[in-house]
Length: 126
Length: 126
DNA sequence: CTCAAAATGATAATCATTATTATTTATAAT
DNA sequence: ATTATAAATAATAATGATTATCATTTTGAG
Image 1 (cartoon, rainbow over the protein chains, first blue to last red):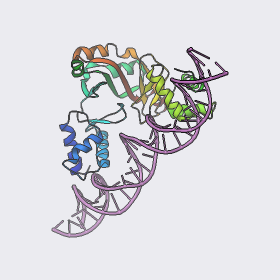
Image 2: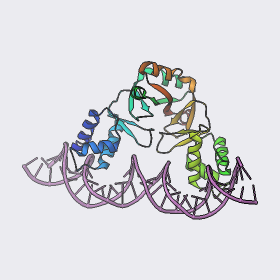
Image 3: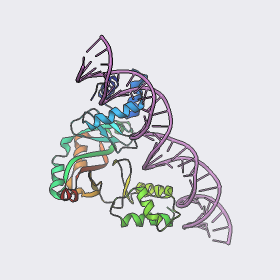
C-alpha cells in the first residue's frame, strides 16, 4: 500500500474520535484540515483499511456504515434514544463461535453482536 | 390495520419461503400470482409487518434487507461462499442481555448476533 | 349504502455508496 | 537526481436499494 497524506489524516482523525463516525462525518471533520479532500477518497480508504483489518466497519445500524479504530474484538450497544454507540467488551460472550460450530458443524470465521436499548446517560435524563 | 389482498399474499409467500428473501425477491415471486402488485407495496407492507413484530427484518448483510417469517428469537449464519442464510437457535447465547445489563447498567431492549463462515454444504463441495 | 380512513400502483425522489476518468503523487529503477 | 509506472486522488456521474408522493381504489364501520 502506497503512502498518502489523505489516508494518514483519515486514520488519525478516526483514532482521535471515539464516536464511531460515518464516512460523511469523517469527511466533514477532515475538511477543516484538508479542504480539497474528496468524499470518495474517504470512502475508498475506509473500505481498504477495513479490508486490511486496520480499522473495523460497523454495518447494520440505520442505513449508514460506521467506522471504529479499535481492532480488538468487541461489540456495540446503540442507544435508541440518543443514537450514541458504545463499546461492549468481548468477554461478555465467551465460547460463542465454538458453541455454534459444535452444534451445527459449520465453520464460523466471524461474528458480531449488536445491542439496542437505553444508555445510562439517557436513563438519568428521563 | 385494514385487510388487503396484497398484504395477505406477501405474508403467505414469505411464510412459504425459508430462504429469508429480500423485498425484491418477494416482489418477483408474488408477481406470478398478482402481476399488478407494486414494489412499493411490498416494501411498505414488509416494513409495517416488521414494526408490528409479525415478521422480522434482517439488516446488515450486504446492502439489502432480508425478511424472516420466524418471530421467535433466533440468530443468523450467512455463508460467505453461497450467501445462503441459516437459522441459529437462540439457546446458543443464554443470559447475554442480562450479563450486559449487569456489567454496564444500561437497559438492553433487543440484541442480535450474526455469524459468518462456511456452511456444511459448501464445505462438502470444496 | 355511504363515506372517511387506509391501502394501492406508478413513479419520482432520496441518499449512501461505488464507478469512472483525467490528473497527480509516491517510490523503485536507472 | 531523473525518469517510469503503479497507485492514489479529486471531481463527478452512476448505481441501486429504499422511501415519498399523489391520484385512485378498496375496506369496513355506522
